[in-house]
Image (cartoon, rainbow, N blue to C red):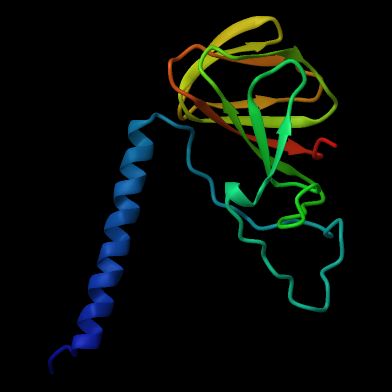
Length: 170
């Protein structure tokens, strides 16, 4: 008994998926990361009840965001997912893409919100609790509440930084 074309496609797709997964695992091992764990799902009662109706997603781009200036800095942030953006009005977090021109500095400061900076493009230096730390595309920086931080674009091209804030800044 032969294998149908549909079955062959299914087997090839499954094999491709297994090969991609194997390739991803090999890449992770080469990065010398911590042991891979398995997500066990959400535990306990959710902090907010699940609505009876289906919740709709908000699909947006940076162009749909709300621009914001930071005092004393020539960089521009765009609130992409944020309470201030009616296109994606988040309640519990803010996602901002921060465009930092060459040689521009956002002076160090601190606040009660927790943040994560992800350097998407360019390179620079972050001041973290008084220490200068070089950053470049692919760097993640976790900032606990009240951790003093600032950023400087030391390169000759624009720097792009994704900033996640929880709770969102006003």
